[in-house]
Amino acid sequence: MVRTMLRIGLTGGIGSGKSAVADCFAALGIEVIDADAVAREVVAPGSPALAEIAAAFGGQFLDREGRLDRARLRAHVFEDPQGRKRLEAILHPRIRTVMEERAGQAQGPYCVLVIPLLLEAGQRDLVDRVLVVDTPVETQYARVAARDGLDRKQIDAILAAQLGRRERLAQADDVVVNDGDLDTLRRRVVDLDRRYRAMAGAQG
Ligand code: ADP
Image (cartoon, rainbow, N blue to C red; front, side, top):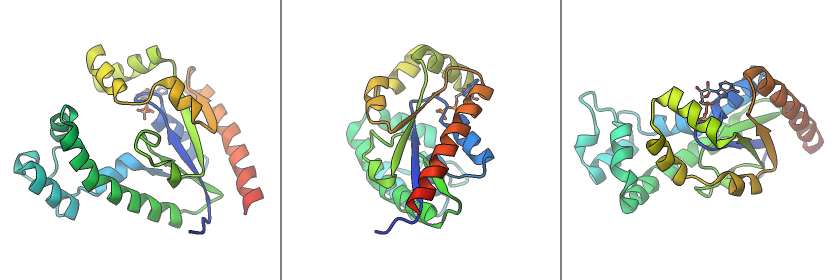
């Protein structure tokens, strides 16, 4: 396949600041494609994926309007590896296809694909470079507790299912450290944007 545009894969642990970094890129006019948003789209009411999920897991995971109760299904498969595999087999190929399509249609010097499990779920080949948002673990806990109202144990369980900080960093091409305020983060993204534009120019 001929790639027309430089693709940056933005990843990081829960609460590391992926959305905050993605917003900084978007503010600089860069197209951002968010795997979480695509994951919601592919299970929209009436979609084939939703029908498959209902067939595999039962109608109790749909609400009265026929929408998927994602939190309930997530909780259901969290401790059931086989169920999770089935769910992933339904979702991942579809998410991937849509991400590919959007990246192929994106405009601008480069595009950013936000993929929380980029390294865990074998999606590295979707992108040209891996940009990791790195945040001290204590900061992650504090931000997730504030944002989602989860306690330490719940956050521990989510973190245990993700790569550790060191393994993730080992696979990074670029790192943005999110240990300061949002202005600091913005400045760091401006520096990255400059580098990516230069790379895209050299490539194109
Ligand atoms: P992720 O998308 O990686 O889960 P978010 O970007 O949603 O993480 O960040 C988690 C929470 O922390 C959000 O409420 C966000 O607004 C906040 N946050 C992220 N970065 C900073 C920062 N540098 N300063 C203050 N709050 C931040």
